[in-house]
Image (cartoon, rainbow, N blue to C red; front, top):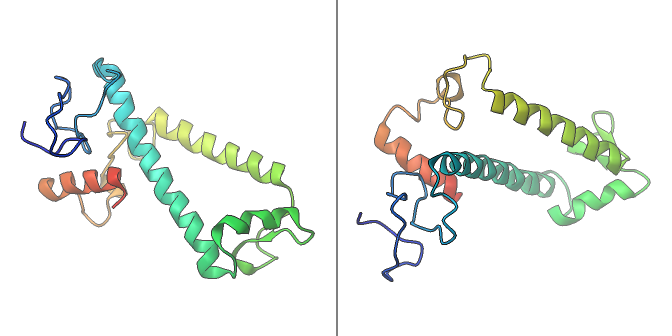
Length: 160
C-alpha cells in the first residue's frame, strides 16, 4: 500500500504480513519477528503498553520539576540523604527512606496491575479488547469517531 515507510522516501521492501493496518506500522521488521500472527499480536500489545508506561514516565519526570526545586534526574538521589524523599513536598504523606522498600513496593504494584490487565477479568467484563477496552476507560468518547480513533492510536504509539 501507499504509506509512510520507516526509511522515508527510499523504496525498501516491506514484509507481506505488514499491511499498514496496525497503528504505527511503517513496514519495519528486518528480522521477521512478526511473521507469525500470534507473535505479531503479542508485539502490538506490548508496544502499546510500553508507550503508555513511557508516557507515565514522562509525567514522573515533569512532576518533580514542577512541584519541587530539582531537575528530574537528581530528584531520586534524595532518597539516599538523611531526610529522604518527601513526595508532593509534605513529609506527613509519603516519606521514603529506603530504596529497597520503594523498589519492592513498585514491583509489587506493577506486577499486580499487569497481572490484572493480562487476565482480562476486569470489572467491566471479560470480552474487552486488552489494548483498547473502551467503555468506562473512554469517558470522553474519543473512540466514537473511527477515523479520529485510528489517528489517536498512531499518536499513542508515536508519543505525540
